[in-house]
Image (tube, rainbow, N blue to C red):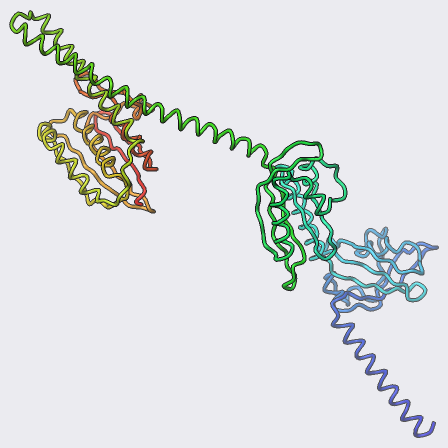
Length: 500
């Protein structure tokens, strides 16, 4: 071998060594599990395998060590292939084959999904490539599960999904879309066919919305009417959002919600509300007119009774005098009831605007009006600092007057005590009016705020309207009213109103 030939051989050897090193580096660092193995046969059936070489990724994927498996036959001293940790490989190999095979396998021992590729290299000698598919399989499973959940939810809520691909100009419909349109499940209609389901009045609205969505990526949300394949009319809510990829509009996706039943119920509810509003208005007008018109005959009865007493003077015997007192007492009670009924009807018809005012000033106004009554009952009324709120001041004062008056009337203590407090929290003010009166028996808990309900005997004057009026005032203000009471010890009324 001359000098040139020797140099050429060395160069070739170096190149081969470099290539082998590159191959070895790739073999060691690639994230695919790679192995070569021999097989041993009994007749045509493969009964065991022996690994010749494995790379680090193979060890990591199957959690094995080369020292424990290289050069060893599996199964070795085992009754059958299924006693081997590589039974999956032996069972898949079956008989020797010339073509490669590829399949997905779940490895229980490491809880991992892999794509397995077996490549025949020589007689009874194979290559093996493992690709970790765990994340992909889990994601596919999760997506499939979510799709199943969405499908069930869509069927339950009557929501169909659609997607229009601007690149392929194809439309996708979910199964529920076909159900809503009363079509057999199959190929989704195109855009024009989809538009044809909408009534002539609503079709232009949807066409304009779709145009804006497909050209500019403008989302939309509309309530429209469709006529199904079977000729039935349905109210639907159709909504869509653009889908961008790399700042390019590629799809328009959305859904259709069948709101036919909801629309019908809402329409009926609106009708009922209108009728209820009209009925309440008529009732309030009737109560006002009736109460106002009743005032005159009551005044006439009182006036003529008093004239009769004046004319007869001492000629009235005791029984006649008792009858007169019954008449005057009855008319006085009817007057109170009429006045309270008028007050009750005026709560909702009050046109006074809400204004910001000091509730402490309002309370002081009420106490001034009740000063004589407080003195006559030998009562003490105290209060803490009171905030400002936005409400109708006249109604607020009427509310406080009714609650304080109740605390005075329904009180057998020689020294009645009433205390008013206010507590601000989360945009609301909760007021409390506490007394040491007779309390409210538990049996009346459901009737406290009902009109003309009384819980004391005739010895206490009242119409049974005070708390009903209080309740109506609070309802008008969007608040709440309740009470706590212990019979024989007293009652605390609470009411909550928005601060603004």
